[in-house]
Image (tube, rainbow, N blue to C red; front, top):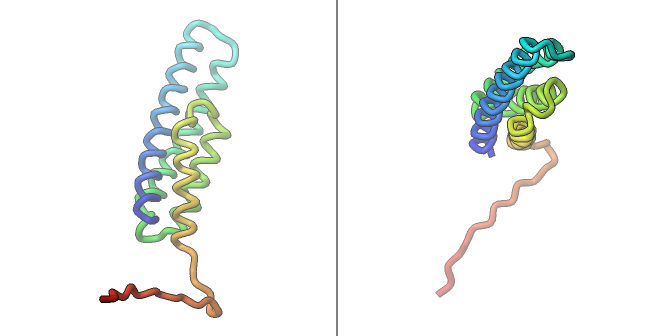
Length: 124
């Protein structure tokens, strides 16, 4: 699960970064033509870029520190979706799924939990 979290985090962060750049370009074009609300789109795109970078960092540390990686990816995914919803349509869900996978992979086993391993036996 840690490897899946790593892959989803990095791909989701890159997708979110691309979405933020596209939103920034759309806001810039809208601002050039004097469209109302274009400056808001540009501002939110600038806010979404750090969320994408946080998602990439979370994905990069998914194997070494899965709990911290899961939290970072969830922050990046949810924050990016809040900032530019359509721009994070690809990266946001990938970061959220990767964050959940990293949190599940990093959970500690409690003292009372019993781990049972089944061994396969070959019968002749």
